[in-house]
Image (tube, rainbow, N blue to C red; front, side, top):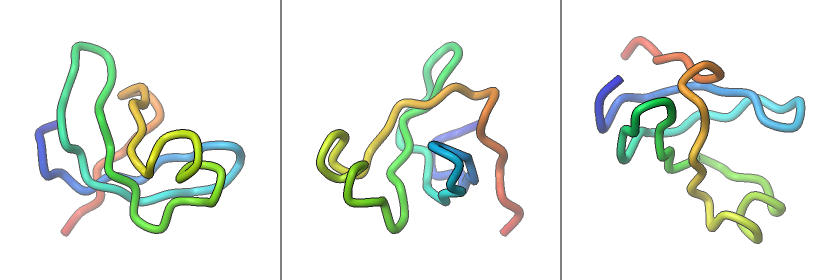
Length: 59
């Protein structure tokens, strides 16, 4: 996966969409579209997630 790729992932039994900002070896930094209140409070709408739980979205 590359930067600026649109992805979908599940977190706390909810599905979220986002855009990859940066790629690491086994994870990616994602800017989440429409983050939950908890996600905004704890992570400012950006999360590092495992590559295993995210899938790219066809544009």
